[in-house]
Length: 428
Image (cartoon, rainbow, N blue to C red; front, side, top):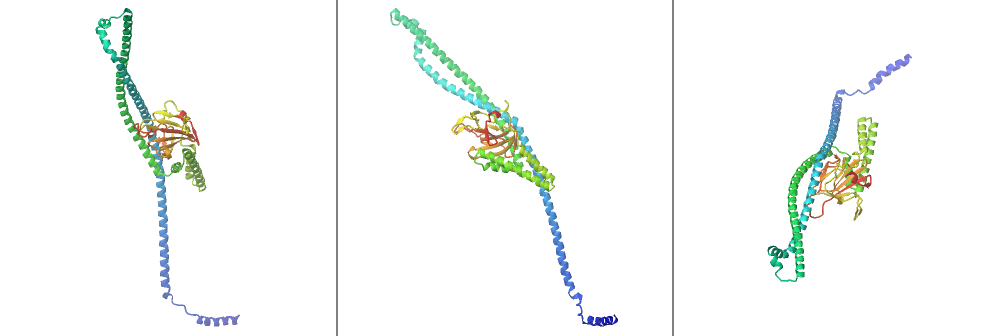
């Protein structure tokens, strides 16, 4: 053991003496530490910048969510306001429609009076022309009866015959005179009635224009509120309207609308399930509630109209349901309304589509709920927007102006249940 230790002691100093001396630390350590500190400082700055960006992004996201919620809330408020404004037009529109119908009836009565006058005047002229040759003889007989009858000596039998002829002629003159008198009296009566009707017509027209301005202002306010609602928040409304615009026919439009709504319901249900899996119950509840609202429909459905409901437009029925036309049995009711007549919603519900459509002109599709939809085509102006809730009888537009020349504007009203057209008459 001792020899081994002695050998180790002897070897140690020699090994230590032969090892290379380390380089002085202060020649290379200072630049390396500065570089490392710079890298650490750069990394720290980058990390702080990243945290700042993440915090800013989080604040931006929270702000966007807040703005989105505010937009949806504003959309809801605007939609409710539009529905309330639409409901407020019901009574005013009903009064306007009664006034329009009164004006149309007066116009028809005035036209009938003019027609009767036009027929009476030539009849009166003919009667006067037939009576004119007899008037000189009647006048002579009245002034000089004996001289007229005894001017030429005649046998007794012929004198009696002459007296009978004169008696008959005088009776005919008296009859024709009464006819002329009666027709002149009727013409004077027609003149008086025309003056009264025209005065009443002027009053009714002034009242109609005042009521029309009131209804139009209210309808525009409702439309503007709905347009703000549509711009504030995206919804299935645009998809439904786009689907209708791509359709080739009314039946195709209805089918596309229902298909789009069914797909929207499925998407909402899928979103609700995804939110539940993510434990976001608030979003899940909102999505499921919206899906349930869509499934329930936009309105209460339809019920047979009562006597006070009124037609969707003033005027007369031009073509009834099922009546034979050039294209077959009519699938709706066609009205011949007065110029610029107001058009009313035939049910409570939501506007699925509003705008020009193929050859139908200005058209709207109104979802009444329970898969019942009214189609109204041929309007001149539409006062509602897609997505708008309207009340039964509310103003939805007006007919084109018509002065009597060219083809008369008509309103075509069709009721569909799913893909089938049904008779709308009991519900109008």
